[in-house]
Length: 135
Image 1 (cartoon, one colour):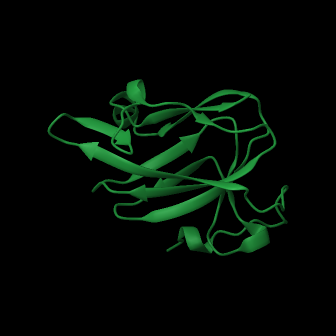
Image 2 (cartoon, one colour):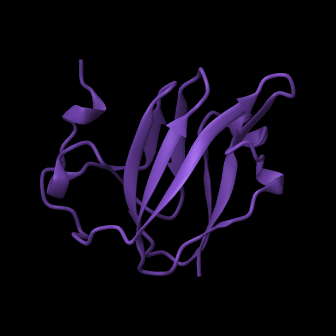
Image 3 (tube, helix red, strand yellow):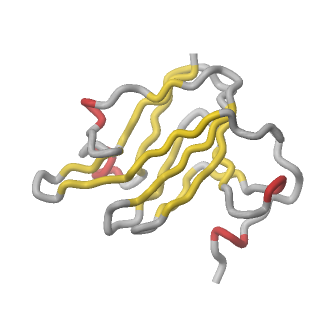
């Protein structure tokens, strides 16, 4: 069986810089209210995640729910931190399993307003989404 820890990019990544900051987000739910969210705050109440153009950051996701969440950030590649240092795999969608904590690196190189959301569309529609801005 292939695991995320087995993935390795064939050549070195495009941005060797270490991250200058970290964004930690908990994947949360409230099943009494049928709400999915980041840090207990649904999309309509959440502030945008602000990144500086050219900045390199680490996103750390902690899944506090009992479901898998395939997380997708528009406008940037996610480099999954899985132990392969200079050969981190580039992913568009990263699966976060229940009770799992994982991290990925992002280089903010595409200006705009981007969606960061769970790819299970009912989770996204019920609040597990944030706006990421790269002005």
